[in-house]
Image (cartoon, one colour):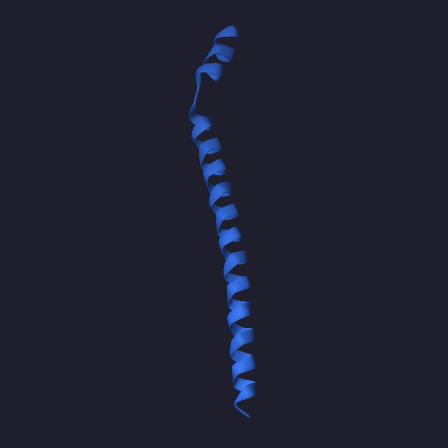
Length: 57
C-alpha cells in the first residue's frame, strides 16, 4: 500500500492536464475580452454609419 501511495505522489501525468486546463481557460478569457472590445467598436461604427446614411436623405 505504501508503495502505491509513493508511486501516486511521484506520478506527474495529471500535471499536464492541469496545465492545459489553465492555458485554455486563459485563452477563453482573453477571447471574451477581445470580443467585448470588438463589439463596442463595431456598435460605435454602426451607429456612426447609420447617422451618416440618415443625413443623406
